[in-house]
Image 1 (cartoon, rainbow, N blue to C red):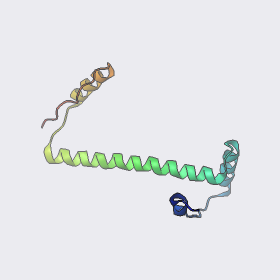
Image 2: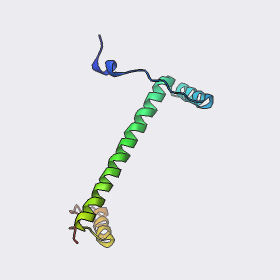
Image 3: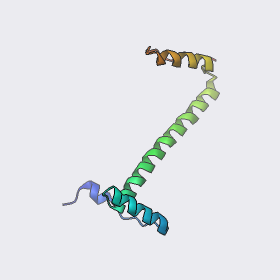
Image 4: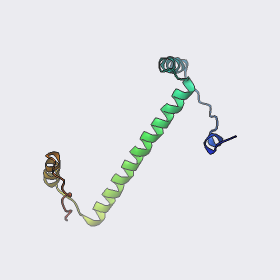
Length: 99
């Protein structure tokens, strides 16, 4: 019986130096995990983090492009005042963008 999840898993070989291999082995033993599990988890966390970083980068590029096209913005003082009110517990809408 094969699940969709297991069917999608394919082995991949990577080359790591002896020092890293030994460190992974020691850490896996300390965590009561296999080195294989530890490497899969490390890769999963890295990919999750980098996908979030790339999404943030794309959002920044989009915001910059919108600003260049429209000139709409808020000043540092406006943003700072809004954030200060949020810190005091007030739930306010962000300041209006203007040219």
